[in-house]
Amino acid sequence: MKTGTIAAREAAGRAAREHLKRSAHRQTGPVARDPLERLAMGNAGRAPALARLRHGRMLASPFAFFVGSAVLQTHDLGLLPNTGIAIPICGDAHLLNFAVFASAGRQPVFDFRDFDEVSTAPWEWDLKRLVASLVLAARQRRCSRGATETMVMAAVGEYRDRTRQYAEYGALELWHEKIPFDRMIETALAPDARRPIRRAMEKAASRTHESQFDKLAHRDGDRWTIRDAAPSIVDLRRAAARLEADDGWFDADHWRSQIGTMIDGYRKTLAHDRRELFGHFEWQDLAYDVTGAGARSLVLLAADQRGRPLFLQIREAHRPALANVFPATVVKHEGSRIVGGERLLRADDDLFLGWSTGPAGRQVYFRQLREARLAADIELFDGALLADYARLCGWAMARAHAKAGNAAIAVAAYIGRGDAFADALTGYAFAYADQVERDYEMFVNAVRRGALDARTDADLAADFGSA
Image (cartoon, rainbow, N blue to C red; front, side, top):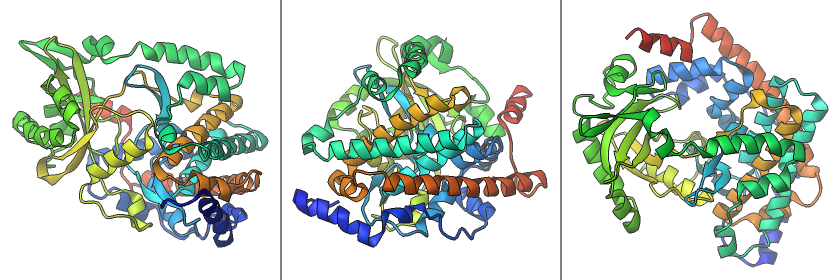
């Protein structure tokens, strides 16, 4: 968003209410599209085996379906009026796309998890994806309507209050804002909710690259080799046979020359000091990563002169769904888009974040396999803990939007101090969750009658078990 005086930015935010009243956010609009056709469009260019696996995971519940079908809500949001205040947004801000990571200083921070869908779009679209996911998660946990309304209001209220707080920050103060997770849980969580999260954090904090090295790799002569852990981490040759036949992604017999060319391009996207740091590592092995099931992904193992490991994920970058519905700056490289968006939105910078071009001209980005990750497990959350977690998500989103978009003053002025905006988003969340459940029913029926292919993780494990 363009800069201007504080008064001008506040005026712009209030003027946006005339363009789109806050109560209008209750609307879901006329949802007249075939969800199966939209899902097929979203799978274009992706590995067919991974698309089938994603479909299998989406069968688990309406919530799981929602998580795997960002293309549907993005399309629907594109048909609705918006505030006209466009900033860099995550683009897929459901509640599972937040997690705790170890920062460069090994302090836990709570932030967005993946940025594959990052783009410039109306700020409220991230919030609408979050609140819809909260209602679906609450329904899966059989929370009452009243409890569900409370958690949605808590998330939006936290976003409102933190955005107003960040509107008072100076530019450098906001840019360097990092919220230690300890501070977040002390501030935003009830005492009963803090204990289980602290226990989980203590357990996760021990899972560093070094501590997990022996589980993830073994010595093979003078080099380290990634252990095959099918169906999540798979040897390249097995992956080629089961997942990537005739796909042109990687030649299992000549991957070293292919990865060398890719790394040369990647190294050029790093700042000089990080390029020097990366030069201390020698790459050892490459494996196929099936955990995401949305895009082709690899795990690269490198080691320094003392044999200390660095695990990098190399992930294919696709055109974001938002690009189909909101005009934004055209990018020449989707990996560059993801890296740039992550650097803007994330509080903690990944030292090894960069991009390159892989075999068959596929655009990719590199990032660390992050340490000490702790993500939500809604199967273990009761209504109270889910509401507390929703509040954390609202806070983290407010920080990211304020940093990336330079629009906190205008957004705060638009939302105001009361609950009008939160009430409207609560209505939207329930109505859109109903729509997701209707789409899910169509999806399940299509799989049952054989019109859509789906493979579960159990199916994939059986495939590799019989290899």
